Each structure stands twice: as structure tokens, then as C-alpha cells.
Amino acid sequence: MEPTAEPAPGPADPLAAAAAREPVGSLAPALLAGGELTVRGRIPDASNAVLYCTVELDGRSADCVYKPVAGERPLWDFPDGTLAQREVAAYEIARACGWDLIPTTVLRDGPYGTGMVQEWIAPPGDGDEAPELLALVAEDEPEPGWKAVGRADIGAGRTALLVHADHPRLRQLAVLDAVINNGDRKGGHLLPGAGGAFFAIDHGVTFNSADKLRTLLWGWAGEPLTDEALGVLRDLRAALDEGAPLAARMAELITEPELTALRARIEGLLRSGRHPEPSGEWPAIPWPPV
Image (tube, rainbow, N blue to C red):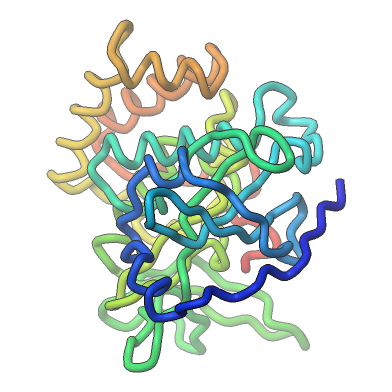
């Protein structure tokens, strides 16, 4: 599928249009789900179709990303369901955890059929300092405020230590990735927002019933989970009980074996009380890491 879009004319009153836009990171699902979706162009270099759009409803507007199911490439290890549904499922789980880590995400019809529509996270503006989350350092041990992931090949026979920030929001994301079994947590999937915030995107390869966790956030591997995380996991377990609204919603988005495995992962985390460690049965770091 190769959708294209003609550039849209600019608004008659740019200041009024800007005032109507929603604050980044707080978009109401109703706007994404019910607004008029207009394709503005295609985001290059994506493995699947990713379209940059605007959505408008009752005088409100926002930028968003639209990933139609028709533009997905089949994956041998995800033969059932769709990437779009998994993206929405990841958002639903993050929201149930009370963690605003994933931009507002809905499943809806669009110009190229059913797809995932997600709030667009614009880069930080002038005066906003983007948080430093990942780095390669020459030292053998991380400095305070950083967690070691492992040695990385940087070419010419040299290696460097890959580290990530010891950031509470990043730690929440590590727990979320363990819950949803994220097979592709790369550095490029962490988008800086305004005010030092950041958001996680690209959750199409999640919820597999087999262990697929691949991430750059191994710095807490084997460490005890925080009290906050344990409380969130206990609440999430209850919210996924048979007959609960979240369980019914997840059954619409992922397969029954995947839902069973989701519950088992939560039980496993609560039983161990610790961040998971690499299993050794699957590459622990995604490639390419960015």
C-alpha cells in the first residue's frame, strides 16, 4: 500500500487554529475517535504505513498519526490480530495503570480503512530541554543517576557502556514493557515532549503469548519492584479479572492466549516482586537499538 496525500492549504487564521489545538500529552480520546481525519502526508522510513494527519471536531483540532491495518506487513511471530489493535491495547493497559506514558491512542476507521490513530507528540520547543534518557559512555560503571545496560559495539573494535537514566517515569515504562511483553523497546521509540516529559510509541509487537521482551531498559533487571509498581500491578490484576470491563476490552484487541499470558506475566511479576531479567532464550536487546 502506498497512500499519498496532497499538501493541505493552511488555515485562514493560523493563530485561531493554534489556539484550538489540544495540549500535547492530554488529548481526549473522543477527539481522535470522532473527529474528521485528514491525511497530510506520509512519514518516511517506517516499516509499515505511517500517515501524518490532523483531526478536527467541534472547533477543536490536533495533529495525529494514523497507521492503517491495510499498510501492515505480516509478521511470522504475530500471525493473529493486528499491530494497530496491539498499539491500542498497550495504551489501554498504560491508562489502567494510571501512567500517562503512551500518547492517546484509539482504533477507528479512516481514509485507508481501520487503523490506529495516536496523538502526535511534537518535539520540544525553544527553551524546553529534552530529557537525556540513553547514552554511551567510556567508563566501566555508570555515574550516579544512570543504570548500566551492557557493553555495546561502537565500531573499529571498540565498545562503550550503554546506560539509561535512573528516571522514575522510565522505570514505570520498564514495568509496563514487562507487562505487555514489548518486543521492540528502542531508543527511537522514546519521544521528548514539552516540559521535560517524554512519551513511548510503537507498540505493535507486544502481547505475544511467548516471551519476547526486548528492551534497552534492562538497568533495573533483578532489582525489587517499587511499592508503587506493586500496587499498580495488584490493581491491574483485579481489573483483568474475568468479566471486568478492562478484560472485556482487551478481549476485543488481543487473542485469548495472549490475554491469558498477560494475566500470567502480571502474576509472575507480583510473585517475584522484581524486575524481570533476560531469559537467554531470545535476544534481549532490539536491533537496531535506535
